[in-house]
Image 1: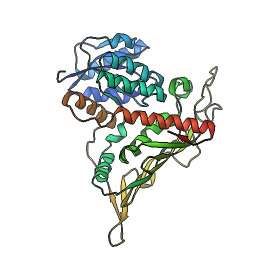
Image 2 (image 1 turned 180 degrees about the vertical axis):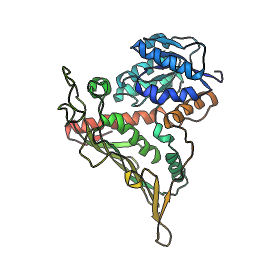
Image 3 (image 1 turned 135 degrees about the horizontal axis):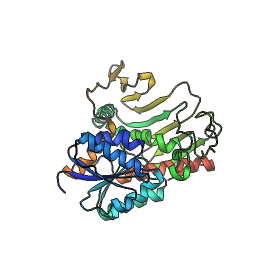
Image 4 (image 1 turned 120 degrees about the vertical axis):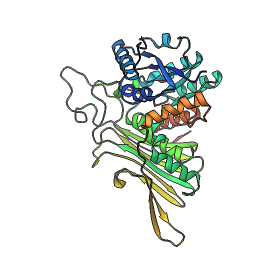
Length: 361
C-alpha cells in the first residue's frame, strides 16, 4: 500500500457530509476516489464539495451501486455511512473483495450480522473498524491515561446515558423504522455512551443484561410535532431505553438513553466509580470531566481534566486513526470483538425488554 490511502464513501447523507467529509478534506494521506449513494444527486453533491474544498481539477467518480465501487481497481478501503441494516451487508462484501472497512456505528443490527463482519475481517486479514468517536475526546484520553496509571484503582461500577427531552429523527426517517435502523435511541445514542464507558473500564466481557424499552411519543405527534398532512407515521422503535449490564469481572453499568422523555433537560453523561477515585462528566459538571476522591489524610479532592486548544474533531480523529493503522501500522484502538460485544448487549437489552427476563450472554 502506498502512503496515500485510496478510499470510497458509500452513503452520502447527513452523518457523512457533516462529520466524515470535513475530516477527509483536511487529510493529506487519504484520497477519496469515489462517492456512492442510491440517490445519485447526493453522491454528486458530496463529490463536488470534496473536489472544491481540496482544489481538485477532477471530481471523484460517482456511483449508485456499492457493488461497482468495491470492484474499483486500486481501492484500499471504504467508509460505510448507510442506514444501519446495510452496514454488515456492505462490509462483508467489501472485506471479501479484499478491502479494509471503516463503518459508522452501530456495527450491525444483530449479533449474527456482527459475527459475519468479524469473520470476514479475520478470514481476509483486513482491518474492520467502526466509528467510536467519543474515545477521541481530549477528556476521554485524559481519563483513560489516568485509569491506566492506576489512579482510579479498581473500577467496579458505572453509569452512562444520553437523554433527550425531545430529539428524535424527523417524521418518515429510516431511523424510526426498525427494519432499517435496528432500534431507536439505544442503537443510535446508546452505542456511544456504552462504548465509552466500557472502553474506559478496560473492555470487560458482558455476561448478563436486563432492560426496559418504551415507545410513548413516536406515533402520536407529541414527540416530534404534528405529522405532515398525508403522512402516515411509521415509528416501531423505542423512544426510551434503560438497562443494567453485568460484566465477567464483577463490575456493572447502568444505561439510560432517550429521544423523547419528560426529563428536566437534555444530558449526556458518564460516571465511573473506582476504589481510589471517581469520575463524572455531565450537565452538573458543565460538561467538564471531573475526578474526585479522598487523599491519604481523608481530605476530599477534585481534579478537572485540562482544556485542550484546537482539539481535533472526534470523528476526524477516529478516521485519522484508521488511516494510521493502515498506513503506519499503528495498533488499532478498536477491534471487531469489541463491536460484537456491543451488539450482544444491544440485542440482549431488546430481548430482555420483550420477555421481562434477565438475558445471559
